[in-house]
Each structure stands twice: as structure tokens, then as C-alpha cells.
Amino acid sequence: MILVVGANGFLGSKLIRELKKKKLKFFKIDKSLIGKEKVDITNYKSLEKFFNLKKIKVIINCACEPATSKSKKNIFLTNVIGNKNLINLSEKKNIKKYIFFSTSAIWVKDYKNYVTEKTKTSPVESYGESKVKAEKDIIYSKLKSWTIFRIPMIVSYKRLGILSILFDFIINNKKIPIINNGKNLVQFIHIDDLSRFVIKSLEINEKQVYNLASNEAVTLKKLFLNLIKSINSKSKLISFRDYGLTYILSILNKINLSPLNIYHIKMLKFSLAMKTNKITKRYKMQTKIKTSTMLIAALKNYMKKSSKTEYRTEITSPIKMRIIKLLYYLL
Image 1 (cartoon, rainbow, N blue to C red):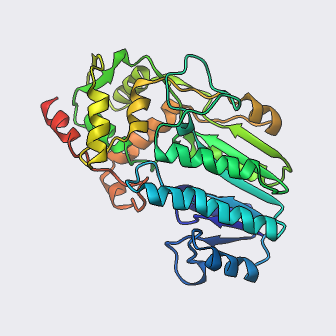
Image 2 (cartoon, rainbow, N blue to C red; image 1 turned 90 degrees about the vertical axis):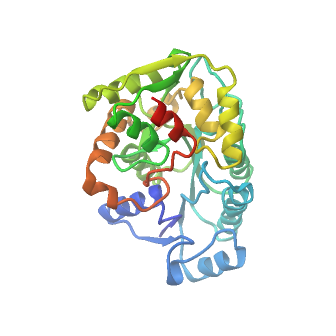
């Protein structure tokens, strides 16, 4: 039996639907669910009680305090302590397979070449640091089999969050500022592609870390132009040098005046593209959806007035611009 942890989130709820389609038996838990399925993985006793009542063979750990969280404590509790509790119980209960989702936020600097699984990590904030620690806890554990997926931002047609700010600029024909001509590479992963690889992983006995992302790494400038063209927006790009603006934005984020944390800001400035040949060769699969294609679908869905009542999670809900609203009105 499969246990999906964090089953009520963006990724967890998608995997639940895929498991149902495949007619695979599963349990689910999430601190936001009700009844017996309401389990907080940071509470070891509560988690152990659930494990004692169920015959679990595989764990898919989707539980995660997001990068946008303002609480370093909650990030550490969920992403590190909660993960460690699951590892300890998996060892104790002889779990056959453990699946975990890491992040490209473990690398935050300007990479001239594609990063591989062997590239030294360089996190700059609590979210990335928590994922590095969680990875190490898995790698040095006594788990029988485990897979770590290192992934960039997960996108679907329902994905919003920080993207809603960009979409609002484009939809309303605003000028869009880019740093240093927007030559830096960006790369995302579509939730459908990720789900396919997760389902495949269920049947593979291994102890491996994999990069997984879209086959398309595109410059930020080209991505923005593709989005503008896709809806015939009149938005224009304006390029400027970073003379301390990103530093100011990171400070404003700390005092809750800007929605952009340091990871988002660096993504606007630095190149990061992931080499994925290790997993595509091992799994004999390729990702199907391009970075540009998935963002265009999300943008077009956001334009539909009817869709704006469907958002429920932090990832699928629009985010407040805060101080960026000044730029929105000025441009």
C-alpha cells in the first residue's frame, strides 16, 4: 500500500488522482485533512500511531513548507523534522520505497553550464537549506530503496502563486522590467511530466538522486516574449542593470513588503538549467512539455474569469503584489 504524505497540496492531490487512474491502492495524510487522515508529520507520536494501524509499503513524501513561507521554524519543522520522522518510521516498519521531492533552490548562483546531480549545492535561504539537509538525511539513512527528485518550479495550467504578478503585467499591457537583458536561462517542470516519472519510480528499486525538468531551458527574455505574443499583449520589456535593486527587494521581503524572496529574485538574474540525462536514461522516458508551453497554458487559464474562483492552495492562488504594485502603476 502506498502512503501519500502532504496529499492535500498541489503535487500531492495530483498524485492522488494519478494513483486512482492507475487503480493503485493508497492511503493519504495531510495536516489540513480531517478525521484519521489528519496527521502532522512533525508530531512523531501521531505519525507512529497512523503507521501502526496501516500496512504501508511505499511512501511518497510531498509534504513541504513552501519557499514563500515567512517562518524559518515551520520550514525546518516540516521539511527536515517531518522528513526525518518519516525516515525513522520507514526504517522501523521496513518500508520498501521512499520518494522525496527536493528543489533547484539548492543551487542559487549564476551557472554558466548545466548543473548535474554532482554539482555542489549553494542554497542561500532557509527553504533551499532545509532541502539539502533533508536530502542528506535520506542518503545517509538505512532505507531499503529511495528516490530523490530535484526539480525546479512545478507548473500546470492552474499554477499561479508568484506567476500571477507576471501574468497581471502581461494581461494589462504593462512594461515588464528585466535584469541585464534577460539572458539568464530558466527551466520548469510540468506536473504531468513529474507525475509520470513518480509513477514509474514506484516499481524501481534504487538509491538515487535525479535532476528532473523540462527539456527546454529558455532565456528569461524569450520566455517573457513568448508569453506576451501568446495573448497579443502590448507589453514591452525594459532592461536595466542591477544596481542594488535585488538586494533592496530581498530586504523588503524580510519585512513582508515584497512577495519576492531571495530565491525568486536570483531566478530573475541568474542562469540555472538542469541536466536530466541520468534519469531519462535510467527510466527510458523523456519529459514532454516545454517550459514556454506550460507557462502559456497557465497564463491563458488565468485570463478566464471563471477559473479565478477555483484556486485553493498557496501555489494555485494569485499572490499579492505588495510594493511591486508601485511598479505596476508606474509602468
